[in-house]
Length: 213
Image (cartoon, rainbow, N blue to C red; front, side):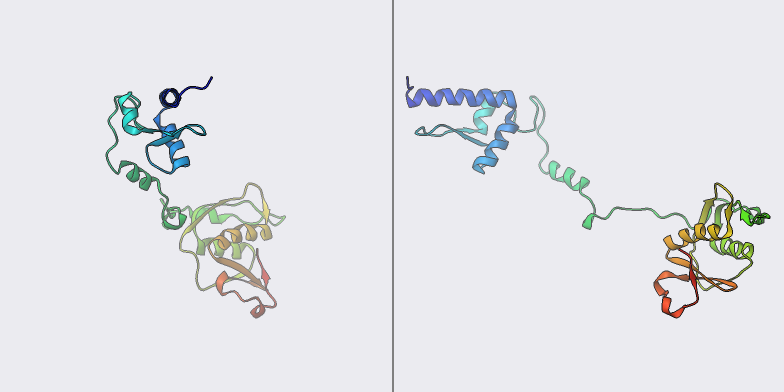
């Protein structure tokens, strides 16, 4: 049995409104946008049937809430969605804001931390808290019985703790890892430790050095 076109259209309209009420107007409008590329519009109907157009006004007359607005709620002010999106938008280029560690220590560092000397096996157990780089590197050179040469050093401080006793070579490596993170490195020559910036380091100019990395 085939229903007349008017009966078929009425039945389809009823189904559309039932779907709009059960799923919410947002899903109906989302389907309309993806299929018809027109705002607040949904077309249904089979082959040979005239399309039935459901507009936003028709939904409002039947108590179906507008997209994203619960029944009885006030609609958002114009531009509110754009303002919220702009607030959550990352910085230009996807850059993440960072903070820098203060260069000055919160309290004067304890100079007694440099009283550590190698034991009979040549091992040291050290801990430095917010010590300046010149003092740390001078201590490294002293316990290694080497001279120290540098023209420029990081301006911040270093906090480091060796969990166990370490050899002098391992101690220099531990300190140098933090220097490398700041763009500097220790070059070990016979009888001297030299600290230079990594960006000006040219290995062919130092054929006899031992690079601490």
